[in-house]
Length: 373
Image (cartoon, rainbow, N blue to C red; front, side, top):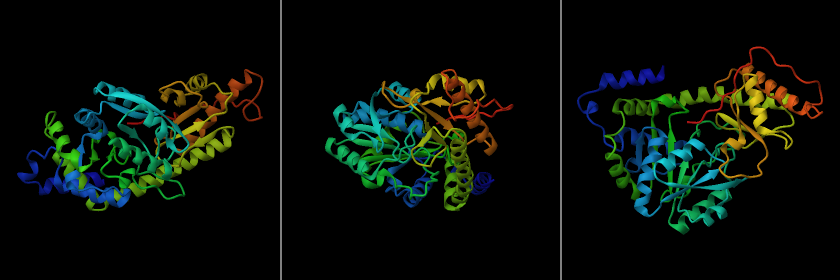
């Protein structure tokens, strides 16, 4: 309802100027609203001149892939594990990708330095898919690396609105080094992916180049939608909307945690309590791919952790589980079904997962679907 109200407000006030072609970097009205909002909630240091409105993160990333070679940067380091489709997208945009492994503090900066890359794409607040939050020491080390190599860090804050941990949510990485870090965010998780609305906060020396690159492809984003989103921010309606959905997703995260403790105590949730998915690490004796297949036979869709690995490694078996679209009862039922699949796998080898009888499938199981756009 808030979004509809904002559209009505904008359309009622729209004149000739409001309906004209927008600036290629976005309407100054929205860029100013975003600069203020991101500074308040993420600590991002930006201005009207350094914010660009995009059609989602994908467009922003494609523009960066086209712009970076102008600075002699032709390969982009990425986190391993990471997003397969994103890696493919970057390579189709003409950049070479270099996977860099993670540890418990985030991307391995020593391994990053050894690649010779001068740009890296990271998800420091809530790493995808592991859920790890980059430690303060690792953030400092990453910024020093960028300064040493005259490089750039692309910070993908893809689900930053949803932080449920008891600890304080860390500020953006960009706050530490606005001349070295490009901050990227979208409305996909806060509102809907179909809106195709995103933004970049870029170092000042990149602003003009990105606008020039963008002007070769389109004439900017939908002006009416930009005005409506600015109204959503400045009216306070976005904050109120996020408080409601944050409460809803927090309840689902808590239900998921309880379901794991009850039905699969042999597994452990990795990373921070945040976002719309969880990384569930399994015991070493579990075979990941057969478990995913067995879960699907029980109408539960999850992905294995190895699906997101770019290089062979010794990471323990894991599941990537999305819970944002499930009712609370569906979360418990899905974890019950996964326990059933684990018990079945172990029973085939003569031992049970939970020390009790093999659990039987319940009728009408709901899907636990992972998604990342």
